[in-house]
Length: 72
Image (cartoon, rainbow, N blue to C red; front, side, top):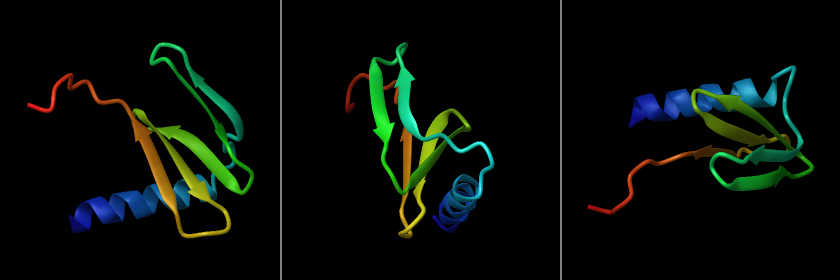
């Protein structure tokens, strides 16, 4: 668990201080999703996921696909 927290913290720092941070609309047509990165947020595609961090709060969101089709 501690390793996951360290990885996520590192990703957050990377997103917040990224030079080429994404804003605006993000589109993944092959997954069938589209969303907007709101004002005050920056995002980056990293390690097969899209990570967003707030520039005003200590918040991190990671969006990733899950190939499991059933809860079993």
